[in-house]
Image (cartoon, rainbow, N blue to C red; front, side, top):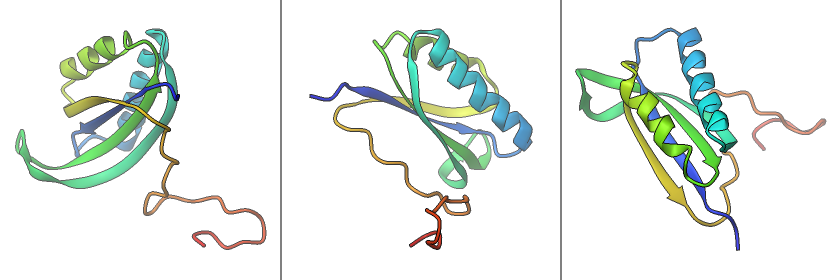
Length: 120
């Protein structure tokens, strides 16, 4: 049986600079580690249009953070997100089963084995 893991998807305001996005990503990654969890994967999903306006924003920067632990890392992570003015939505879901393989994000650079073109 595989160990359950947590998937936290959060949406940042679309008007913050890229350096600040990296700061938030690192901050939440470190928070999980400090609370005793292990960060499995962190993926920038990029800027996307929202299904409905949130705080007058029509777009948001999506970030997916996969982590595991005993569940104690979720509360401090979500508290920090709730207090941040740059996070407009977040959701943590407990997942059972194997973690999905990371998919290529459009516009991201993929590394292909030597001699093979990327994206094949």
